[in-house]
Image (cartoon, rainbow, N blue to C red):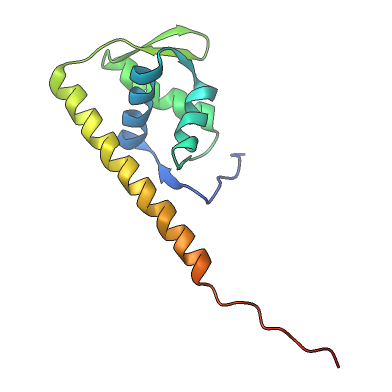
Length: 123
C-alpha cells in the first residue's frame, strides 16, 4: 500500500521528475534516493507513491541513457550528457521551479482570502 501523498506540493512524475533528480545530482554530487526525494519535496513538489521507490524507478531510466550511474545501494551520481540534453534539462527545471513558486503563491493567496469564521454571541 502506497504512503499517502502530501497535498501541499505540485505532483511531479515522469520526465519532470527525472529532470529534477538529474539536476539535483549535477548540483550536489552523489546522493541517496531518500535524500533526492527530500530535495524534490523541499523544492515544493510532491513525489507520488513510495518516494524512494519512485525516485529509484525514475533513475533507472536515466541509467539506461547513460546520464546517471548507481554507485552503491540506493546511491546515485551524475555521469554526464551532451550539451544539448543538459540545456533541455536545465530549461525544464527552470520552468518547473517557476511553476512551483506560482503554485505555492496561489495556495497562500487562497488561504488568505478565506472568509473569517462567524462569531456567535453567547446566549
